[in-house]
Length: 117
Image (cartoon, rainbow, N blue to C red; front, side, top):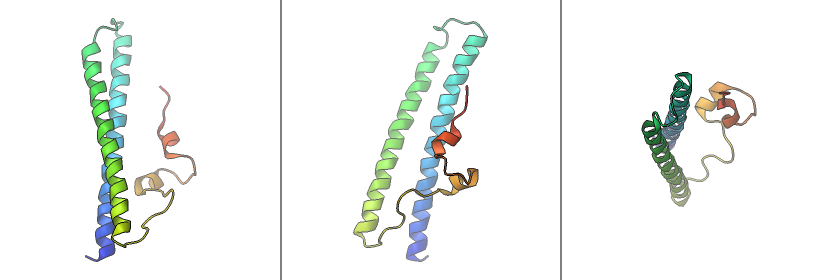
């Protein structure tokens, strides 16, 4: 593999890991919405399911901590990249592969993923 291929491979793995964590956070929040909706639909007391909802929220907090660590990893890799003399690999906002496939608009990625509940 060439130097550029190795760097691109690590960058792709980093992007994949970032997207996976974002997806996990989104799915966990959807789970909590579903739990609240089910409780409401079944006319159950807010006390019902409080423990399981708390555990799901703990999971979201843990995923958030993991995401912060991965963002810090991204920043450190960028520093290493420059320190080792590989120059600037990407500057400014760039469409990640999965985001580019979603839409071709300039609308922020976060706004495209929001949904009405």
